[in-house]
Image 1 (cartoon, rainbow, N blue to C red):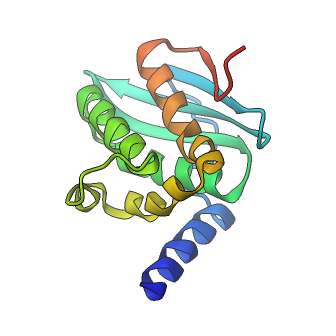
Image 2: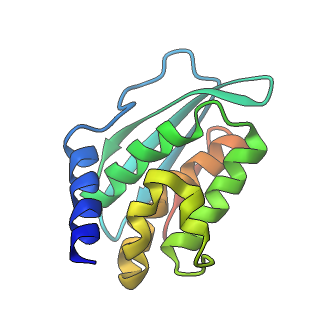
Image 3: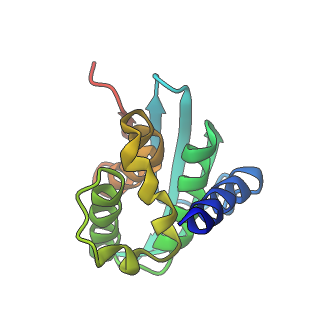
Length: 151
């Protein structure tokens, strides 16, 4: 199992060093900001949607390795997905990082399964899920600011 943990760690570190889709999306028609005051993570997620399908997804901001890697992998995972498919992916990912996913379900998450170990560190759940909550806000209430902490 150590080999798998090392692989997961390497994927997270690679996406932190060289995040995919890390830029402002000039022609976005959806956007939301995310803030995790406990860790200092702050990011914005931009979407370009056509006919209820995410054509493009990008993000930009600063944060810990888990937060940035999660946003990087998320933006790639939701491209080409319908709003409903993206919401279902959000739900599965959230259950993964909170330890509530069924044993067979990580297979349905592809590379996102690298975050399975996050559930053992509750404070890191907020880091891993911040970009996902911003994605959900961009889908539901464009322009909204989401926070991992309630005011």
